Image (cartoon, rainbow, N blue to C red; front, top):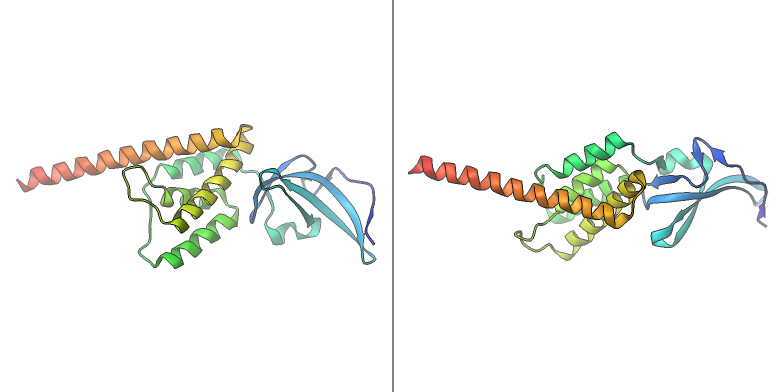
Length: 192
C-alpha cells in the first residue's frame, strides 16, 4: 500500500519547480518532493517531469549521486560548450560501432561539454556527404539534449536554442572550409 504524506519544498539543494539534468533523459523539472511508504519503508522521492518526452520519473532522494542528477550548467559552462561547437570535428578512425558507443556514452553522461563534442563531431553541412541513419539519430539526440539545457539556462524556447546552435555550426563550417581552401591555394602556389 502506498501512502502519501506532507510534501517538502527542498532537499539536497534541489527545489520544487527547478530545472535539473538527469543524465539518461536530459532536462526535466522537479514537480514535487514526496514521501511514500512502500512495503513498510518510508521513502522520499523527487518527482521529475520531462514534458517533451511526456514522462514522469520518481527518483529516491538518497540516489542522487548514483544516478548523476545535477543542477543546470552555469553560464560559463554554456559558453564553453558553444565554443566547442566552433572547433574542428575530431573523428577517430575506429569502427563506426565503437564510435557510436562512445557518442552514446557521452550523450548519456549528462555532461554539456561532452554532448557539445558529439554535436560538433556529427554535424554535417550541406556541402558534406549525407549522414547514415544511426549517425543522424545520435546527432539529433545530442542536439536535442544540448538545446534543451541551453534553453533552460537562457530561459528561452528549445527551438531558439537549436537555431543558435545551428548558426554557430554553419558559421564554423564555412570558416573552416575557407581556411582549408586558403591552405590548398597556398600549397598550389608553392608547388608552381
